[in-house]
Image 1 (cartoon, rainbow, N blue to C red):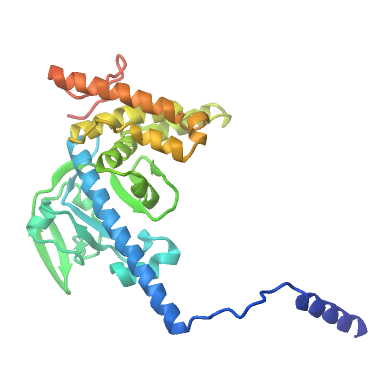
Image 2: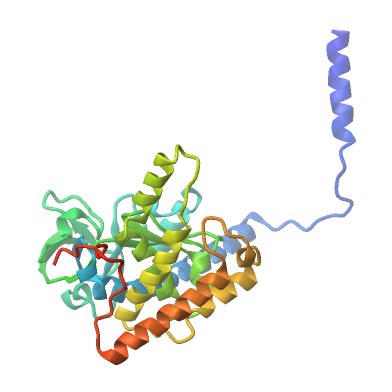
Length: 324
């Protein structure tokens, strides 16, 4: 018993000896804290929605202008859906409060002048399949549909409309402080930090075009294959990054975005993250990317002047089968 009391005494002495603050700190009331939390949440999700609209506005023309260059197409109605699982776990309750996110997909936004907008689809509508179950805007049943079934205020209705033919890759926005964008062979993801970094829509189009090129050229699959056949000794991706820069520029050019000065995106990235100026790891260094994009811009402009098709210069026998 004495030993136990001694241990308790020593432990209590150690705790009492812990350093602490030396001032009387002001403590907000629970009501004040709840109000400020709600205010910050509302502002954060309003910012997210604004970015999501911008990403959809910029990416839609790229997916449409290059549909003939994508092996897989789908019908696009200009509708973006979301669900609670679209957001990080710790933000799902807030997404429900401020954006109306539910457990199953629901319409978040409808692009202006899109087929969905013209047909009268609204934010808050629920897209449903033939069995009456909620589905996302990227559901397989809508790939070649000429009509959409929706549920509004508990009532089901059928809306006939013809979607635009676009590349079959979903474009998503991810809440993250990392300046990043990536493709996984099936979709494209752009972070909120990248949305902030891409100062103009033309720069954002450069990013989206780059990620679309990763998907259309099968870079994810090729990188995995190279890793496997090397015995997992190496993962060569730099050539694929350079090719995505090159082809992505064509994709944005075909969608009508301005190319003048767009290569400065890489200068700003290098200045912001100096390591990328000299360190070549999974990606080429930023000076190389800037100069290569500048040369690609000159190539595109020369083709425009000559009236030739805006298609990348493929190696002999390497031009993809576009499925036309």
